[in-house]
Every structure is written in C-alpha cells, then in structure tokens.
View 1 (cartoon, one colour):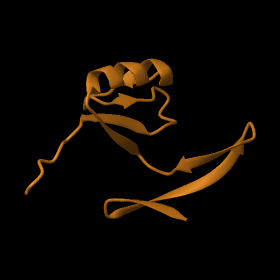
View 2 (view 1 turned 30 degrees about the vertical axis):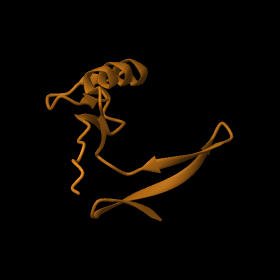
View 3 (view 1 turned 90 degrees about the horizontal axis):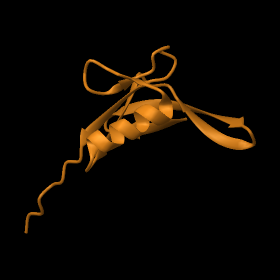
View 4 (view 1 turned 180 degrees about the vertical axis):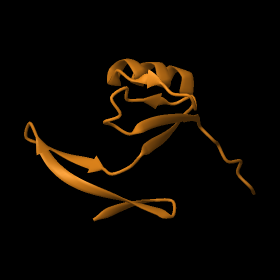
Length: 80
C-alpha cells in the first residue's frame, strides 16, 4: 500500500498505538506549506522537540524521525 505525493510513492504501514490506528511513513523528510512558516516552525519545534536544521527545516536530534521542512504557501493566480 502506498500514498502518492507528486510522482513518488511513499510506503505506509498502519499500526495500532493506544487503540488508535496510525500511519507510519517511510520517508526521509516531510514538507508542508504554510502562510506563516516561521510561526509553524516554532510551534512544531517545541511540540516535536526538534532542532533547527541547516536547510531551515527541523531535524530530530536522534535522527529517528524524518526531517520536517516548512515552506511558504504558494498561491497560484487564477487565469481567466
């Protein structure tokens, strides 16, 4: 089973943790877009206890979890 992001497929494995079905992704990094990337970066850094990475993202100091990259939201202009 897999999830498609763009042209790549990322495998997932579902596990039950504390009676909650959770998807586990086999990915080196996750990228999200936000209209407030600096605020989102601060929030997730505190929640996940991550360290700032050289590329401006967040990294797990123990390297157990994938890196998190937070980009500015790209809004496409409508063409009429």
